[in-house]
Length: 215
Ligand code: B16
Ligand code: MG
Image (cartoon, rainbow, N blue to C red; front, side):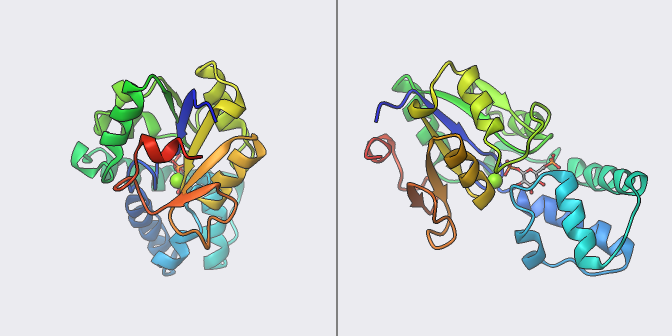
């Protein structure tokens, strides 16, 4: 295929922010009087903030009004932001920078396609701004993954057609979003979980442009 653009999910692909989400959700759950485990946290990957809160409240068996939920989400986000503010470029996942440099040199356009409303702050903390031609995140979309909106907007911003894009995703909902957008998709993680991806890699460590072009 002719690749004009690569669209990258953020958490789990470029950086592991799931550990910070976990700490912040765990504190909220403790305030509410129940334990939130790492296993529970797996269910929140790639899921929007409010949908994540609904899952967490379901685990705790807690009912809340819309106003209460908004306060809880705000307090979780304050904790989360205080953690990600301390991030630095050393936290970029292995192989990511080499791969970004390689595809930029080859003239391939790049965009972030993330559910996170904090994506601009994270990109700034990681000093990755110059590597991305567009950032589409939770602030720019009205439909969460598996709806393809975030990737379709990314393609549009890069002036690329869906058939010219490759999506990099770590979450099942994100892979489905790429499939729904009729885009090729490379899963980051376990091929038994990310079944709908066109190719699955454990990370960018041993990945390069030559392998991308095999798609
Ligand atoms: P925020 P991604 C997602 O990022 C995370 O995987 C998910 O756990 C989080 O709830 C979501 O962003 C929203 O994040 O609360 O910062 O808006 O994987 O889509 O880059
Ligand atoms: Mg992700």
